[in-house]
Image 1 (cartoon, rainbow, N blue to C red):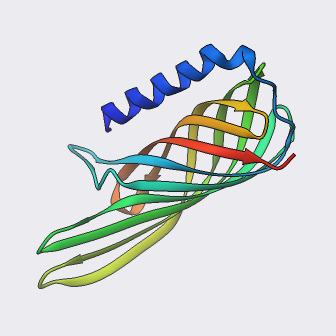
Image 2: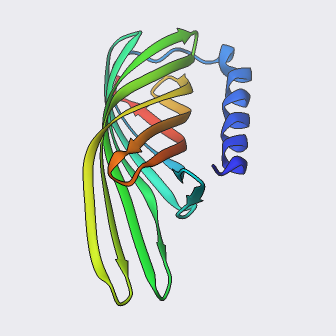
Length: 177
């Protein structure tokens, strides 16, 4: 896992928590967002990140203070060289159980991930694989009126490849009040 990215995300969330008492809580409703991600693929003895330039898009609805339903598109990364290329992405749908403390949200997510991996190897051709897997994660967020920020960890397993996919993200959201 890209530990530098995880440390920056954690420090950012803690900094927001320090100034949180000065902000007002957001109302529930529909929200959209985007973020930067760092993803690690863990296949037993081999762990690797594809690249550091990944992103996620977020669409959600929070009907209650303690519950949200969210869909994410996550670019899991890509790698390219003269002999090999790979591109991975996932779409997730999750329920978030939220504990709200003033403007700070602690949450756990559980849902399903639809992943897709496209790969090609020089001389051998190309192919793709996809599937549905359970996903789960945890996060911390702060909201200041309609604007929110969050740091999050999410995980799912690609059974076909016997690989764990671990994603850390730092995102901004906007709630339509």
